[in-house]
Image (tube, helix red, strand yellow):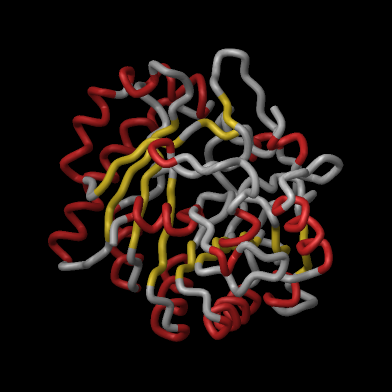
Length: 309
């Protein structure tokens, strides 16, 4: 199963998840580090609206084991940070695969730190999917949006190509994927040359719409959409938002969030340092929020600004 099929499987809500108390999500993203080395304008992370750091190792191990026992099948080793910053990323992957038995462990990266040695360690640990976020057409756009030194831009493509070589030479089964954000109607055209260059090294390459990051990001020149509606070629309805029913999101300090873009902790549904995963997953605040989504009326909720542009 490729990455787009998996994405569509998570963003498409089946009847069993259309409940204020759904079963354990099939997929969870866990933030082993909340730090990121980019300051992308499309991402609210640069605003530093919450403290970010590394997750406690013991907390990670406890949660990873507990969630697998509850039926979680896919574990993403990232949330809003850049996980290649974390020195124990391979250790976390190995624990999830070999100790907990997750069928699918995946990772998304901005690519700048995904050097061959780090990628090799992750693939050797059992990583099933590595996706590069290719959100810049050239150095000029990279400098304008990512707002870091331009010397990092060529490293992204270099590291992606090197990851492909590591996989082939190492005999690993890890999928290598790439996505890009459609800031406006011309972005895919701007990226034609860049995407054509890396396409032979990707198993799949797909486009994402521009999310408003829970209404925390604005730009008069870009074309935002409401909520998180999945990938561009298979957009879901903004209400009910699949994210609060079918995928868990855990911050580095152990909070279970109701949102893919919880940069300011307002979507906190439970402190996992003090309660179990399923207790937080079906907590009273989560049930109340899901009820509003199922009724397709989020007026007065924390989701109102995101969904209603």
